[in-house]
Length: 498
Ligand SMILES: [Zn+2]
Image (cartoon, rainbow, N blue to C red; front, side, top):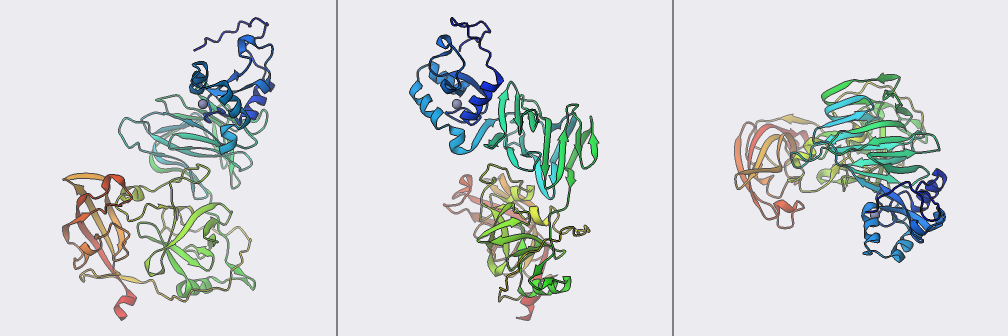
């Protein structure tokens, strides 16, 4: 590698490049390596090379990462390819700039001078987890940091997605230097400064962001400010959620004739609505027409053209119909198209390998983390939604009651289970207080059958062969023994009338 010195070249040109020229080069390159999109880059003279250059001419310079620069100086990549990349930069083509980070193996993240230690969700605004930690798949590996960053006007700018930093290409300036990533929405305005030193906690040194009207800031002194509170040099230790602010956005249900009364909505959801469940079988709300309704009978999302969005217009996922007209609200991947990561509950993670699908549950975004918690907040919005006059024909009640009978199809049961392959427990094969409706087939084929005829309190093993085309590679075609305990059996009122 070339040793960079400050001594001028034969034409008296110094290494130092004026900021206005650097900014021009960054803008032209889309803020990352023109070849591969990596954020940490150097300003390179393509032709003539620095030692022959008479000036720093942005039209003859570009951004290259260390690896791509090495390929060019080693002549494994031609100058011609660099010119081609400069004309059509990676970041502009793909609308993203990337960088892998390798933080501490301990579950710590800092907001300025404030330490968050062993906390799952660091920050949640309006029901949306915006910063959280996930344990690594192997002990000793870096903890997986997730964070979603907006600018001070509420526009999404960047995210850390399981230690992959991604910034979308926008009007903001972004660059990497030393151990820091900086984002500036405008000249002189700090949007975000991240310190990503290896084997150290990720430090959000500066931030100025806004999500749905909530302002959040880490200032020069390292003070963390939000919602009128200032944190300085605090330690937050071991909890599920550290900071939770703002209601989940919701509005009353209206049609062309006006706002619906709660009783009318309750009647209509019971008669025409479809229940929405979490992926693990907890009831959380209803679909009524194109509206998703929470337990307070408020509209929390709109479903249109196969897409479900929050009432503030943020894309959530897709409603998937399961048996008996029940719905799940899911996304097909752990991230959205803009690389924004999606928080996944530990129960979903625990059962991801034995579920018949590979969906990611997004119901927490509109129905809350605790789907059975009674909300007491008062409505603030007066917006209206158009409620189309289309109703489903299906009519159901939703009452289950406890039974000590033998388990049969349609029963809702609560179980603990532990799966083993060759006597070894496997990832995702264990859960406690897991709810399933027998016969729905949300678990691996054969699992539901093994429960039929058992009763509350029964403890037993079932043997199951994972299908050869199973979605989890490690389990394809394997035989597993599940030890099961039935905690509770409930039967649907309707089933008894038959
Ligand atoms: Zn590169």
